[in-house]
Image (cartoon, rainbow, N blue to C red; front, side):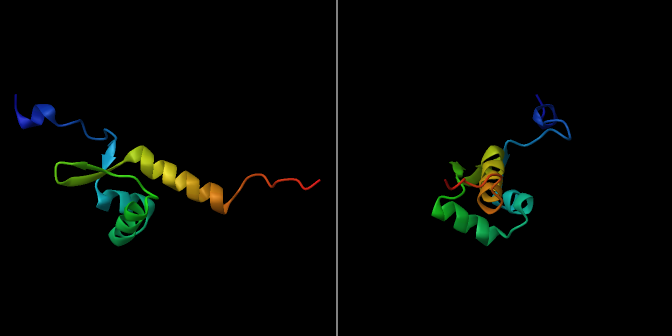
Length: 78
């Protein structure tokens, strides 16, 4: 089996991102991503010596920010 046989086809979505890819997806810098990881706001995994961030974690972080900053419903005061 060659390396080419194990490479996913172009356009195959990634499920794990590097810090740089996560930063690019969120439109922020690497340092900010590392700060979010350190604070626990963005979960990551170590695979060997490589840090990876699950794509669904990046999407969940983005959704949390959106919900916090733009709530869709306001509580009613009775």
